[in-house]
Length: 548
Image (cartoon, rainbow, N blue to C red; front, side):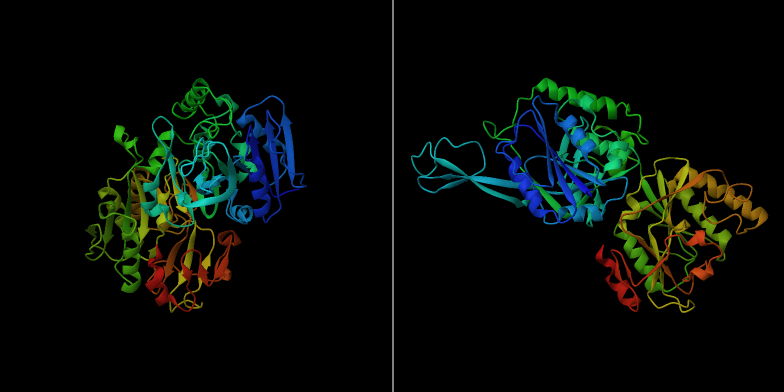
């Protein structure tokens, strides 16, 4: 029983042997290789190896069908499809398995592959890979050339981000790397080339594998990308590891390895448009518009009149606390959120976005009214509620709510002790799954409706814990409405700073909770992932958290 199966559909692939050898040399985990020799035997022949299975079809069944067949043969936890002309990072298999949630599709960082050079056997001159030379550039040799294998990445030809245009044609997207959400080792990816992808094997079949109605070849990257996102899952690039892909674009005997008609390619493109632009894939939970809005602005889509959903924050503060902490929070937010997207509501004047000074004494009703005032002022379609003492990671704001009638909470949050009132080490942090208002995101219309009714109820009846602070977590008659709450998980966590002026109680021991259900996933840590060490160095932590 293997942990990972490498699936390689191969038809007339002259570099299949090098690809298989490279994988065997670089795997460090319990990984096998399944080759589907689609229409021809491998030439040159593959050496026998206990980790390599070869299935031969005398008549080609097509790349999609061959990939599906290899996936059916696999019994591993994970599968990875790759082209038969690729090279891989040392230990790539282990690195990929370390970072893959059940509903993720993972794409390693991609480089161009320098597979070989041509050497003139008369003068020794070498030229970069391409069709068989007909003459040497430095001597009169026209016939005697030797292929010299290199099989190394071109380190200056790196691709992390890709997309598709309005015709669903694959495109590179180098400019995306300048966005805040492109930072970090694991980043959301709109589309990919199709040459290599990795996921849980069960997940592959949950999204119906590869749709053979496309035909043999074409639109594979768009298909897997749309299935990954529109099913409610996620697709990411993992920059911790890489693969290198050889591009055969020069024609002759260095072009596509078998005949592929333009008609066949068009069949794949037409079917792709039917599935995604017309919304005919039955397992889709989101629309293609949702995906475009998530990554918007997307070139060609925006230029043709598509209006993306707008995002904004409502930042509320009681204007109390250590200004070192409060200013650090605002500074962190400004790195990701533009001023025009920020509505701040404070009890004292504050130079932060569009500021509303709210008259009132600190308290629960005041907080609810502050949030309502911010929502009434905001014009954004989607609103994130942000508190003055939470350090928000940029990935928190990448989320796009799939449904307009659901409250969404980012549960990837660590609580960090900076209080003299808490019996815990300074700078110690705790994680447990919880929904809190400071991590709430939803469509503004839904939030506005909720807080209008919440303020009315609290003014009339007063606030009780049975009502709850968090929309969607308490049902009527105690709760405000019947809309549900769901969790999401940002790539990197937020940091909720617990200090001497928090409105709610700080708890750093499981004994302080009445129900064990309230502390699922409980762990105390000295270092917060992607933020660094915090224990016994809180002040230094505030100074150096500007990593993002």
